[in-house]
Length: 408
Image (cartoon, rainbow, N blue to C red; front, side, top):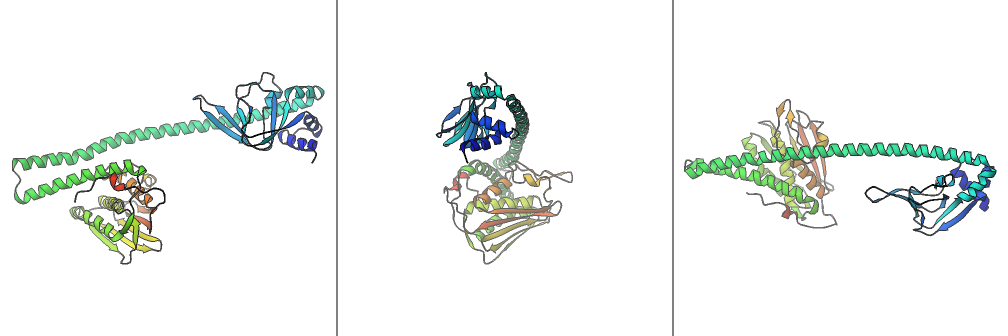
């Protein structure tokens, strides 16, 4: 292809409605220039008298924002053009900075040559003005869409901030209540012990209640420390017997199950594989699931924990016959500080909304998966898949540092 034909083809991309005769005339005043990478072709705020069409390479278009940061608007490639207003307006000032990202070949038309051309061919100026007008309208439409999108983003961000503020206030109030309640009981029990009014079997029961209240507070503080540190820590993986994990969880839950008259059943397959996992983390995750199942179960209900072998690891299921999960709440189930609070007009167990986020974090750190099935009023079933080897090749820190030891 001759250079003239090549110029005409390229100009046709910029001016598709222009007659071939005018395209040829425009090509006669165009120059082909190749620039090395990282060359500033035109600068924002500076006068300009050149129109460019990209033949080969890439051009980055940037603009300085109000905060003085430079924003990349787009990257132009073959057939794209810019600076067309420079041909019609002698006072034209560049609105963006254009810089080559690699060796780039451009077709350039200077305003002086163009003005001489339109003196002989006025139709060219009319066609170019029409093209520029259409392009400006299209740019206005794009800008309006971008402004509308940014407005929606700001509104969404503002709504999210409002929600976070509401969650923060709600969390602080709930946290204060969750700590105040056992502390008030502990203070009362300690006063009884100091006065000597509690003796014999009553003293043992009182000490047991004090221990239970302390366990509750320490567990809550542990959860807070864990969520605070989990993003910067990795589990300390070792060879883990999943049966031992679940046995410890069930043993810890039996007293509460007895108090609530809940039948707690453990069904563990005999051929469970050993896992490379974080023992304390799994205990914490399954404890929250079992504790949650008991809290939302009616008195006399059943909570079943089962585990079976999988070709690639193990599957653990925790099911209950409780109130189930509201379908509207399900998308927020694993969000921090979120709680399913009411069922049939009755207030459900409060809590601070940390249990399910902790479960998600721990199972995620083990490269595991969580599935949930629930029907309102019929109960809930969690199914957790754990791979044989949960290790990740990034870093290995000890997540034990992220929580206190639970009292026995």
